[in-house]
Length: 113
Image 1 (spheres, helix red, strand yellow):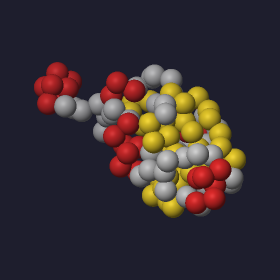
Image 2: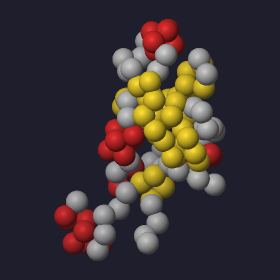
Image 3: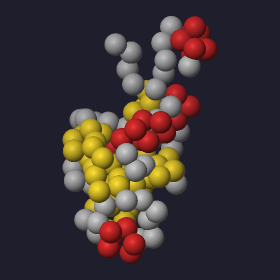
């Protein structure tokens, strides 16, 4: 990170445009889909015209993985969204009700403020 700060004058990060919160998974649903998680990230809000909207995410979905990396908490989602993910296609795995879905998503760079 220090290298990016020196080179670019800021730390670059990617984002998908989701306001989320840690959320417990129904044990029955997690077992049915063979998920090794007890929690996921509940999509509580979406930024307009964000990568998440373009990928088909909706409020109430529960994100459980990005590119196969489990996302049991918002912190795990943030750790995944590094500068090297900017513009790189990933697969977001999420629950919509009891249905497990996978859609392509392309994280964008967080705009400089």
